[in-house]
Length: 185
Image (cartoon, rainbow, N blue to C red):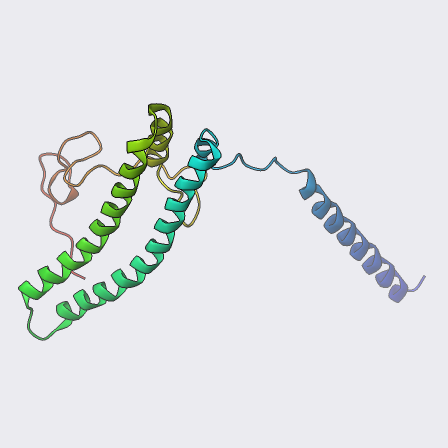
């Protein structure tokens, strides 16, 4: 056989092997791991009667819609904060007032949720309120999804506290040692 025919046959065999590998690889996805269990909210909601589940889902949908509107409002108000900071002369009163306005937007949303939950809790028996408490206890799944182990890890410690419950050393240096402040950017 001449060399040209050998290369054609070799190329054909290689393409066929790649094609078979691709087909097998795609078909094996069908036999992959089982789908993940339903979110914790669904499991908790399943313990409620259909009427009560609808009430909670209605509140969740309202809060989701409010959240969308709130994000846009907060974005605009934060732009005003940055404009104040960028101004030629710094107006501390305007800066603090604008920060209070941003905080009041968040507080209003929290208050609305608290009021809606209180309305439900007044009329629900203790067993249903326990489900409601479970729903409130579970943090929402972040937009980017859970981490590699199904969660995003423990929550960060409160401000001013280290992981062991004590205040962190100044500027992050080892205990008893003060590190220089971080360089200004």
